Image (cartoon, rainbow, N blue to C red; front, side):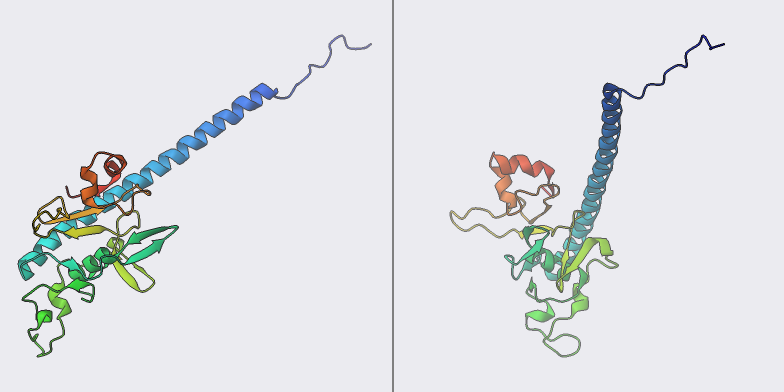
Length: 216
């Protein structure tokens, strides 16, 4: 006797169901990647802020030691990072001025041994140890690339720095602060040749500078 019950069919997923599943997976993936990217950016900004605060304190010690803030010898020096070119002269100067590792990137302050006064060894060569303003500098604060050492932000980019100079006549100021301007471009990968004073003028640079990490 034949069974009166037919075997129930087991159809597969419909195209609509597959599309729904794929969409959910894609959304979960996007949320995961987006959250990871946000965490990376947040950590990079935090490292930059910590490094900047340490440098600000060290720069004050430098001023107390030499009577003025340091200035870069070759501020227009540049370096390629990925597919971008950044000015690195000031960041290289900051590394030397705060770590004491060299002095050729610094416009030597008057009154230091390297300004023509003999050092403790009777030599006219600068005493590097005299420049050590940031002891135990963590590796995360600087980068060595192609034999060049420079202070780097949490995004791996050179810090930017401009020392204030007295304005003469109608000369436009070069800094916002009366001491120095120190900043990181942060997540801004477009306006990487802009200066601090450029952010005073309404426009795209001022808007983009909201992503910068700065001391003004």
